[in-house]
Image (tube, rainbow over all chains, first blue to last red; front, side):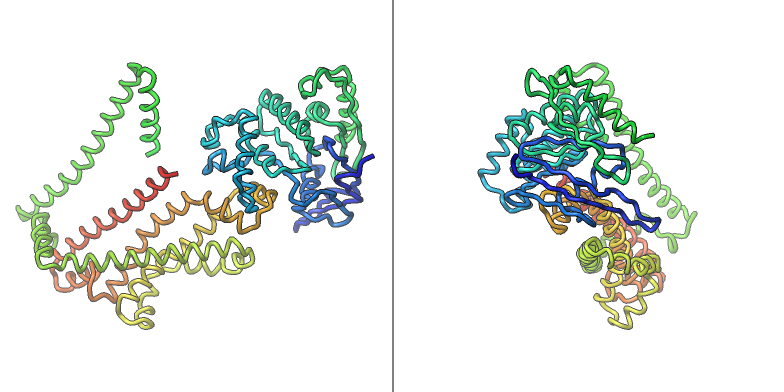
Length: 253
Length: 280
């Protein structure tokens, strides 16, 4: 087997406030391999987002070890729940925010960004403000902003949760296809089980707070094509759904 | 203001397609309302001046104490011919603009420092609150002793009136910048400094403009207080001097000029904001 991109060993993390300590994560261990799409599901408040913050280096684990095997640390891309496009910038300036911050803005980068915008059907909005885009287009623009940095590991923190159901289906399918095509390793956090099954190669189920790895499920669907929409109509889809639902609903009892 | 912009957009959009009858009717109604408001605004002013003039002429009020529009105009023309209008108004305007300039710079710097250091912000909070609620005119006599009676004292008085409130309001505005957007900057590899320049400052531009509009008015207040106590020239000095020698024409004319200055200063900031938003 390949060398893992990410190795998490016995990670624990707590939040401290004056009213007490909240254990968010407890003894989490897992590995992610190159090119994999892994979803992390779990009951709300089980520390899923905390886990991503730890992986991206925004927070430090209180115990345990996270080892990344990437070319450099900057090649982690992070997508947040909201698109957070800046209203005072055009779409082009928004997607070029990353290179601008890292002082790596070159003509090539700019052309790359423009080609991505064209590929994902946003080219006509290059010089428009975010307010002129629909929710789905905004989320796609946010993905391009992440992709411009050419990440080799992509962290997705419920990136579709702010969208309405129909947009959510099509955008998650689009974004799934984009990620598969560019062969990026991705970790998706979601509470939508169907979304997790349709997009992932593997699903990690966390228990309720403090989050522990409860189960890992490999997903193998007999799909007609590579889109997330066709995955939803695969014959095994329901079995996986029921299996996941059982694991999660145990946690709510 | 917004309503007008929306309407403007509407009309440009509509001109591309066809303008319906109801739309023209709506536009007409809006215009009529707008004209009516402008008319009655002017009417109130003219009526007030006419009643004032009439009462003064018929000696219903004593024009020695209350002056009259015609006397004010006479005095105003006299001020222009002997040049005192330019020197007094000029000096007040200069002092106001200087203190406004210093307030803007200082409060921006201080609010930025408070945003960067949470400790500093916690440390200085009670001091800022006390200094902000203190009646600043109480400080003016101190400034005179420390700095002498002159322009420096007047400008410092102008600064003192608005500075602390301005720092508090800017710092609050900075603090309210979206923390998720700051997180985004961090995930893209940016520092806290980058977050300030790319997120906090641009998102606070409307806040900064409204803060400046408050400051320009307050610095005029401070400068007039300063001139009352320490001025040898300026409109504040004219008002105090005129009341002491019972030349109420001088007092009221100066107040009228002050009205005009206050409006002009506010309006120029309004224009600056408008220009900035348009350019964007």
